[in-house]
Length: 121
Image (cartoon, rainbow, N blue to C red; front, side, top):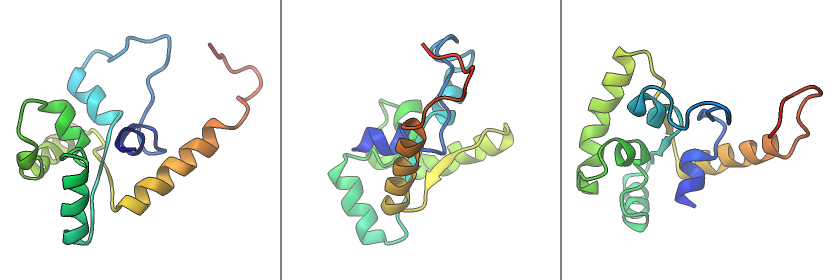
């Protein structure tokens, strides 16, 4: 569930299959292909963070995998600021429900037939 809400959503990018797996910039690739899940209700946010072992901060997990997950909320603001400075979109679902809805939209898009003439592999 955590992976799906972080990567298989309509706000993140999917690199083209024929391109390099992680592109030229590892950090930028991680941010472009990953989304965090926030919570407007602190108690629910803490419960969700506990249930998923801090992986509600997927971007931070990818960029600093050896950092204790308890520090992810503190470094998230620094990562977001760095993304803003470099013109990279930092994706955060405003709630668990918003993440689930984003995933549902992604599934709907993936279920559609590719446009005529599109290259598929």
